[in-house]
Image 1: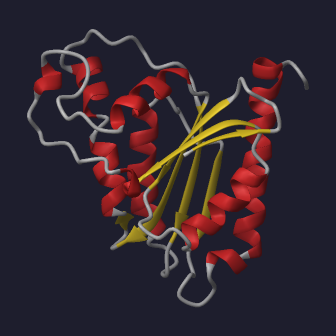
Image 2: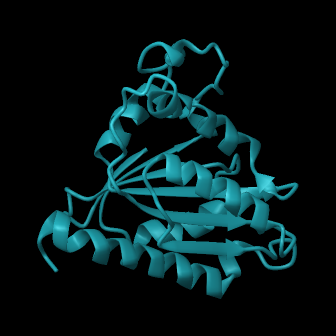
Image 3: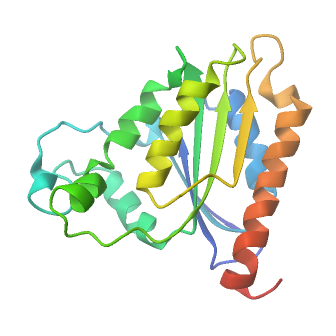
Length: 201
């Protein structure tokens, strides 16, 4: 899914959505976030038919991935984007299976840095982390894993972390605090990228 928002065509944001639910808690938080985000937005999820890494280790020898699917477009977009958003439900104190499947396909980036050693350092990117779950406290391990993925993709530390962790009792779509934080995160990215990217601040 590609969206062009507000005429800010130079700022680019990649959203990696780890939720299999099109109208669930993560969707509600992302809707609040994207509604306030400027620039171009590309979102990928498990609905885009992206396969997990097969551990074929082809990327140990050459750049790219042997699996030919929608990730080829994502690799290209990743080189251009300014912001990366990881949004996932928390399952058993972990990121969701779909999120981990998608993240596994960044193995080629890891291999380029640490095995082939032919990949340049990632450009510094802004990051946002969005997690939703039914049990407060279970986000800690999931957040740690998410930050490892983000760091591989050039995000030193997320500039915003949004947690809605009581969804069994309060759906994220009614969690005013989390929704406000999602909107604020979008505005933070607009402010961070606006001056450098669009020249309009």
